[in-house]
Length: 294
Length: 294
Image 1 (spheres, each protein chain N blue to C red):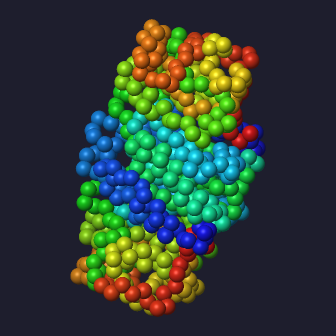
Image 2 (image 1 turned 45 degrees about the horizontal axis):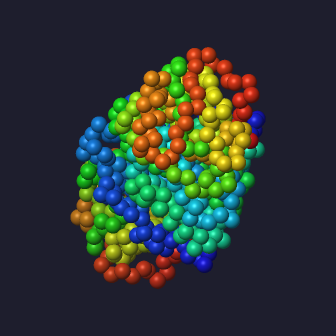
Image 3 (image 1 turned 135 degrees about the vertical axis):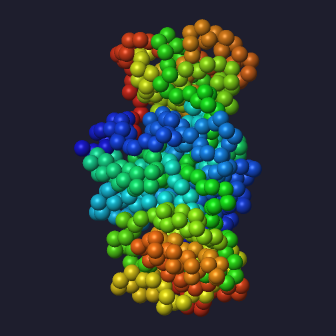
């Protein structure tokens, strides 16, 4: 059955009861706004909106459940980048009238699966039709303790740079299945002073200069050290994008202890790839990664 | 110049400093998430996401500033519907690479103008390209005092139904220029007990049954009383949609006093159009308004 035969009210009425609810949700999807409790005093609020577009971030031939997973996991990855705790999500679904109801349900199941994996509640939804490619927009709100949030701009000269996992080759499959590094990021700020952090969405080649720029610094990279996915060249690792791994900077003395503790706690890899420098010179052969609108 | 020549980082770098900031914003657009202060204790958080799509909610021939105004004003109208105070907005802009930079700037100026009119800060943005029609998705967070928020489901039998303004004909111009009824809604809950409220986005013909259904009631309407825009038939007023006026229900004894006070305070009209009833029968000739996906 097509969405056009089914109608928005019925779609939402079917989907809403399938969403999990936490105690913080006072009024979930279905009214004009969602109503939720603020977390305990001493916290700051985090906000992030993101979207994925058919033909850009996914192809229609992929399973709808994975597309939903990706749509939710991307903004959650931004929460990881700040060491924040995501809580509530709003979905805007923009699809053609001919879209199959079954596809839509699978998409929401993927969204819900990713949300549930991180105790996030889907508290609202909006649907619209379009004559063009499908768009799934997800906004997430949550919190972070005062003094615990990590931006891109806190890097200091000589800070050591680390990345989690392996880079490159995400388009083969990982970009639809990645795990936002929320738990790892929370662990990092619980045990160490992280000076600057971000998630790698556009590739290390684009994102590392962003972190260095924000910190008003340059960087040096040990190119051999960059952890690559199997079959990936250094160029792939720097430019493929959609890794959704963490890139972060810590004081030089901290690095060794951090690596030791990390290995005891996590199966995901952690690699020291270089350092921030006072001189702001991008390495001559540094590739430019994925640039939006190009 | 096209966006494709300009690049996302430069676009955001140019636009971000133009956004106003309130004291509650700790970190605005530009990092992985926005960081903001929670409002004072005793409040609940409100969340709403909405989007407008080229060819559905606007045509590309309209001024970009008005399109931006509409994109922001729609979710603000949902805050009015709950009697809430909007605070922070996130924008996702999904446009073709060929989109003109000047158009994009005008769009953001319209978004910012509507935000500023209600003390809302744009704290984040995300851009993506698409091969299809433009989509502007706006999420808004804010608060409402405990005990002051109004849902659709609190209507009681014999409650009197009111609408603000005049209905119908919105597509001629109003849909790009309407004022969200936030101030009016806050005034209503400051002075009166409002049992149920919503904003009219799909037309009274669709939205009134939604409010009645949510309250598990029926309704009676004095069709002659429905306030119409000049040149609009009753059918236009019920089905055109995009009125963004408030529909609300109050106890029968309250209505007369409310009307009197309203007239002293507001230039916008207020009209008693009927009542909620125990019998749940939709009037035989009741039109069905705009239905999504059709």
